[in-house]
Length: 236
Image (tube, rainbow, N blue to C red; front, side):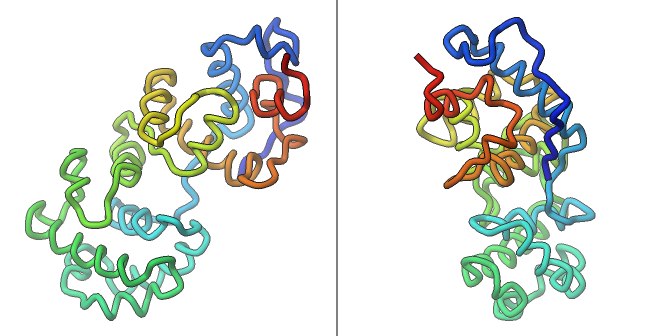
């Protein structure tokens, strides 16, 4: 979880509430600077030990909390420790193990089908190629990007509901779709920061900039946040 540090100050000559004077480049610089200072070791909250486990966990996490996924995967991985074991599984057996996950019927089918496809077409290995990942059942744009950046270190920006919300609220993006958000973030965040930036945005949205009641009093980005400027009446 993100742990803001009160003693850390955003360094800039711009006055705290002069939103109109903040360029997009400066907004990105200051946001990344604060996250780097307050959460330098940001990582996924999914528990996994290899690429296979990460892929399965990410598929299960769609419209479901990481905490719930982490409750389910230990037993799932104990029974199906690798892609070859899962490829031999019956989807009803998998369904029993993941029944507390959102959309368990569809996800049980996805997991079994994906495992079989990995065995048949990829020698049991998780591919790093974007199109090959998208061809796997249950793998969409976000999941493919998670695998590329988290498993293979390929510059990517997975956009989930947290990333989409936080980026638009702060003013890093002004977009209406996850894909457009992804492109804007890729354009403005250095490649060597993308992996951490994804986690920073997710954790910020999960614990501070929440959907219904953002905790602006706990946020160190209010000086550059367009949403805060609008709601607090500091924006002209």
